[in-house]
Length: 253
Ligand code: PEP
Image (tube, rainbow, N blue to C red; front, side):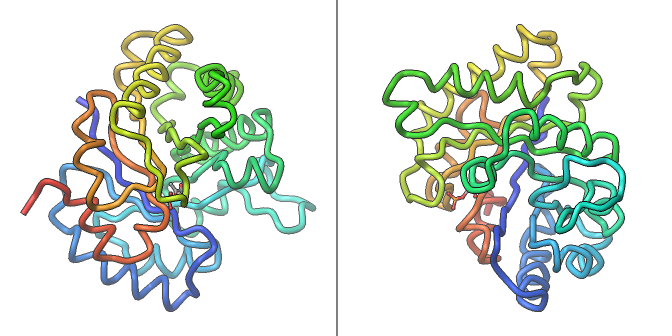
């Protein structure tokens, strides 16, 4: 039985006080959400304050990125996974398409970040997904399987306990154009087969695979009705406590 995960990626939005306000507004709205893991990913500068204010609640805190380097050192502008852990993060988003696209992150860098996250005791939310062009060219599965095998290179079956996959088709991120539940299900089932082939059927069956791309309160139920969709990574709709809470509490009154 896979416990669903609903994660909010706040991207480069909100000051520290705005982040705290949203986190504190969210806390009571999702306090009874024991059916899933609830995660929010504020900007680095707000992480510690938000994590402190959420301590003891069921809302986990994630970094949006971490360094490829495990050890501290002369890497201006970088933050290690251990430093994220130190300020109260339990998860880190790795390989988001915006980082791949605008900061030229390669699968090899994403792989180092996954390894660094695991070494630090964090859970890595590994993002994969094809562009519109790649989908139209019929190479979506090849792209996604390459990102998975590249991103997870060298990881053992037991390491997979600390990995969550987020399938985020680039054409659906921030565009309002979500994949249909059937399109998402097809790719999620494919991703699970990649795990079964590369690891074991048990590991594939246990892997939590989230969908991301314009998830909103009105489309979450359709997505979650699919067998292989285990939750969502939510951008825009996670910025407001009430819409994110509606996604977390989908199907509940
Ligand atoms: C994201 O940033 O991971 C994302 C899915 O964004 P949005 O929900 O806004 O499409």
